[in-house]
Each structure stands twice: as C-alpha cells, then as structure tokens.
Length: 68
Image (tube, rainbow, N blue to C red):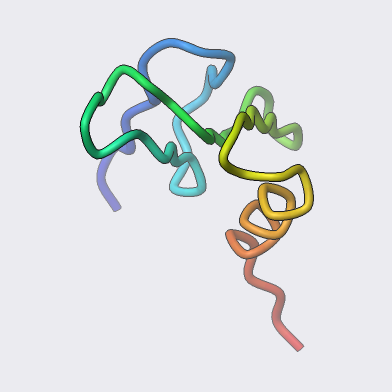
C-alpha cells in the first residue's frame, strides 16, 4: 500500500487510514469533527457543535474493524 498523508493541523500527528475530518460545506476552515492517530496505539477525537460526544464517539468506533 502507498503512503497515507497525515491531516494538516490539529492534534493528529501520525499518518493512518483511520484519520478523517468532517468540515463545513460552506467554509472548509470550519472543522466540526476530527479523529486520528497521535501515537502507535493512541488516537484523538476533537468535536464541536453540531455533533454530540455520543455521535462523535460512535463515528470513531465505526473506523475500527473487528474480526469475529
């Protein structure tokens, strides 16, 4: 697989396929939610209105694939 770039700015420090941000459709500088890797086994989540903490946490959990 190729290189995965890190997201610019914020507290996300390591490149990962799990990194993502949700931004405003009208203003791409307004980041409503971001999730990403900071260390090998540590992730960070940043959230603001219109998302609740529960919604944000559910989005974070959805990025992990568990094999049964």
